[in-house]
Amino acid sequence: MPLRTKPTSLTFLLLCPPQETLLVCSVLAFLALEVAVDTLFRADAGCLSSVSDAPCDRFRELLRLADVLAFTADALALETPTAARSWRRPSNTQQPQTAGAETSALHSNIKSKGQNSYYYAHKKRENVEIHEWDGNAAPRLLKTQSAADPGAPEVTETIVNYAWADGKKRVSVYLALPGIGGHAEEDTQIDWTATSLTVRVKHYEAKTRLLVVPKLYDEIADVKIKRKADQLVLLLTKAKEFSWHSLKKDS
View (cartoon, helix red, strand yellow):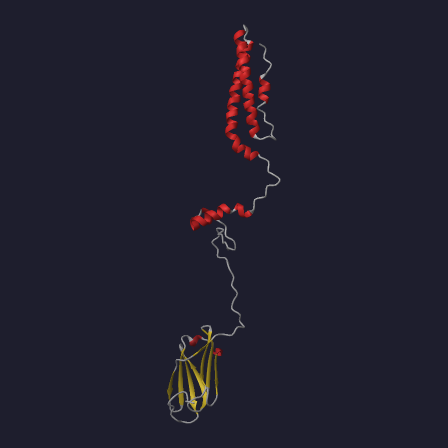
């Protein structure tokens, strides 16, 4: 029996158009397999009834083609569900995926595992200053900080601990200030009257030290200062040679 179906016509069924999905390809492969099986039965009958080898050669070609079609159909049947989804054209009505949906998996992982989350450990943090070492061991400026405003008033601290001693002509006042001997002399200011005394030591340990005696025990005629390594000694000259029982006079 002459064969009207050629192997090339069956092979054409496997050439799936690129614009179609793999689901259509699998259907075409199964149809081609049915045609191949039907052709095999007819070719088998022709081979058995013919005395020549031509029908048998055609039968063997169709048998090989049927095996290829069967394998292709099985492979497409397995790949179709996933492949069809990947080849499906996007719908015009499909809403674009929002940024929140894209990061939902990351946020869910961080929420469930906290700081142990892989995403938490590798997540980039915003507003974080990053310093990377370039391999150069030379020192470099990483950060600048504005200095204190020179016009701002300096903190003043009152001197409450001091000692004094009465003499025949002078009264001595002792102020303990460690390191005052190396302090600038112009930063030590003394204001006095016959009955009052004020001492200011500026820029001492970033402060102004202040001693105020608004009313002395008796009148004075002069004030001199004597500087030592860790002490200031104020020498008050008495206006009258009277004994002082206190540095301050009770009001």
